[in-house]
Each structure stands twice: as C-alpha cells, then as structure tokens.
Length: 261
Ligand code: ADP
Ligand code: MG
Image 1 (cartoon, rainbow, N blue to C red):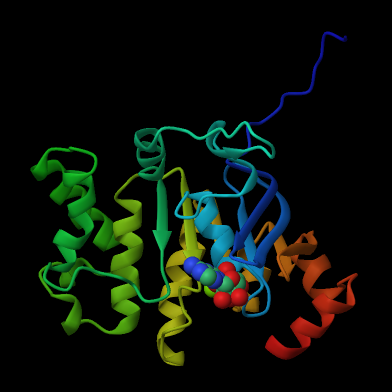
Image 2 (spheres, rainbow, N blue to C red):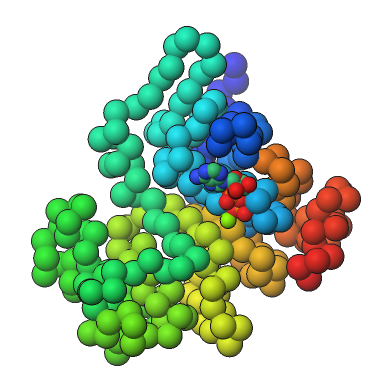
C-alpha cells in the first residue's frame, strides 16, 4: 500500500459478462463495457448484432440472464448462474430508470400532448416535481434544442427532426445522469438529420454521458470518446474513433465500415 493510491472514478455504465437470450437465440454473449462519466460512447454494428438489446439492458428494459449491470455505482441488474438468483426490487429499478434518458428511433412522443407537455409530463408524474417548475424548465429545454417557438404545437404539426428534438428535451427533463440514443436519426429524411446531430453534439460538448447507437460515422468521429463495434452479440473491437474508424484491427469492423462509409 502506498500513500498515493490512484483515484478511481465510478463508471457511469459498468457491464460485466452480460448475457441475454431470446428463446434459443443468444443475442448478447458476454458483454464487458464501461463508460466513464462525461464520456460519449458510440455503438456500431450490423443489424441484428444486439445493439438495441444492449442499450435496453442498461436501463433494465431487458433483464439480463447472466452478468452485472451497474449504473453510477448502483446495481440495476444482477444474475448469477446456478440456483441463487439475485434481483433487485422493481421499485428500485424504476427509480434508477428515471435517471436514465432514452431517445428512440421513432421519437415516441405523446400525440395528444403539446411539445411543452411532452417535455414536462415525466418530471410532474414520475418525479413529482411542482407543475410550474416543470413547465418552466421544459420551456428552457425546448429553447436549448432550438424549439422555443414550438412549445404549444402538437407532434403531428412538427417535422421528424423537430419531433426528435422534442424527444431529446423530454429525455433531458428527467435531469438524467445518462442519455441513451437508439438510432436517433434513422427515421429522418436526410435533410433533417443534421439538426438532430447538432443538438447531440452540443450535449456531448457540455459533458453529458451518452451511449449512442448510430450509423452516422461523422458524428462518431467528432463526438465519441470511444467507438465500440458489436457483432453477433460480442464486442469485436473498441477504442478511440481514429483507431476504430480509420485503422480497425478486425476484419469484421473493416468490412462493416466499408458498407456504411
Ligand atoms: P440491433 O439493434 O443490433 O439491430 P437487436 O438488439 O434489436 O439488434 O436484436 C438482436 C437480435 O435479437 C435480433 O435477431 C432480433 O430479432 C432479436 N430480438 C430482439 N428483441 C427480441 C425480442 N423481444 N424477442 C425475440 N427476439 C428478439
Ligand atoms: Mg436496433
């Protein structure tokens, strides 16, 4: 023991040996992944490689069959093989989940609520925040994503890019420690992709911890601290963007990049 122990930072995301099957199909085959606070991790991989399932295990939308899922030092999923199964109380999981923002490919806004109410809904109903305070913060957040003038609009009156920016504001309204994005620009017309990526770049710059599934290699190059390439439920390769994107070590990574670049 020395007097100067290195300071260890608690990872924001800490997955160890995570396995998940759907019936006979093993979708995650032993995933080890850590994301430090303030870091942006971009997850790449072919369709069906397990990217969405991996994101969903992080906020416990999917229960793992085996392994450890930690978020900010708190265990949110843990299973051991054999006869001793450990699971945390559902209440604890729900509480933990409200600190994790999730942005989906298809926005998933409430169609019957205005942009403002979409953003303020969860802070009021899930976090019990005072209504006036939640609405005022929702207005600020809509401003932050460039939609100050659209607060009273219903989703059907907004473009896909605007809807996705409302969805990002809604995720931020939970004051999350962690934001998860699952192909946030894949459903958008090409001319609307940039406005959503701009908002995501701002978030990345301001130190938000993010895990982003995307095929937008330009975004990965600029915003990611770490790029992870997933194939058939395993992490094939991970590292800084210039290494994984420009000098991949694995043939499977190179082949995938050849198709999306
Ligand atoms: P990706 O996001 O990389 O395209 P997914 O994580 O969505 O991959 O899916 C990985 C595999 O798991 C696919 O073969 C998919 O069909 C299967 N899968 C995903 N969710 C379910 C589910 N709820 N039930 C059965 N199979 C599923
Ligand atoms: Mg997916």
